[in-house]
Image (cartoon, rainbow, N blue to C red):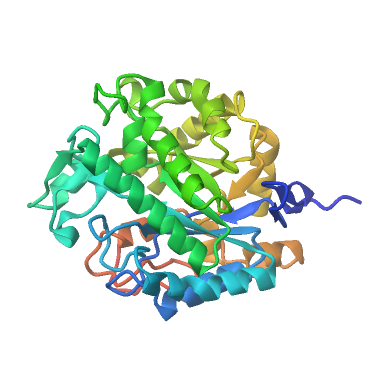
Length: 384
């Protein structure tokens, strides 16, 4: 008799040589427990060791900042020197032990970064500010990128990819969603350039394609996947799936292994934080639009609380990979418990969004959880 979870626990080939043991992945999440210089702390390592051992096929280490000039959180992960690379090595050892592919997400925050942490104006395609960050930081400044800036950022991605490989990675993910730098180049809302990097949807893809090409040229044995923002949540003013869809084949032709999808940017992040029906509808319709032109493994993460949810969306949306972030944050063992018939032991996520609110709360020393006993939110932090 078929297992009820067969659709998500069967293997998936990302390439001829890279096969995931199942179709479930821990999507990138900034847990913000690194040391202040961005080096992975023991707390960071311990958290991901638990996730790796929990039965997931792939783990994405989220938001590894590629350069000291781009940061968002004081304890956010960085990957721009060898010390930071070496600190991540135990996770790749654990990944091999448990048959879990460990991936590093390479991040440039762009205009959604924090100038208070970098001391320098933030880079963006056209000098357009992130209203959310502008309201939070009195010294916030943003500047339009010159060709020299673009060349420098491309090299930063190449160096960070090499450091990920040095740590043990076989696969990196480029963060091109949620309004961060690569994503902001893709969107007509933030990219109003008239050079080869803007002016049309095809031109807005140019920087992402060049970053992929330059990483592949320097590190040909390293696989690349992309997290792609498909809907800014701004209607006609922003990124929309129908704008991106015709160019997905061009992105595939660059040689990436997989594409995972997300929605919202800084100004509209409440779509995901609050798990709104609007977010669910936008994500589902957007996935269907991208699927029309996507032949490589396609995945998404957002509001998946159980393996039953994962099976449902795999069937309904015809995705190949299903990401679980908050659900596995709430219970690192959710997959193992589900498969072994211990559902009654699972700490299910409430999807109240408080973990995201911790990230901008000065009272919170880290990202906490409402249900996970390992890092329960202290009683003095209350969002009700």
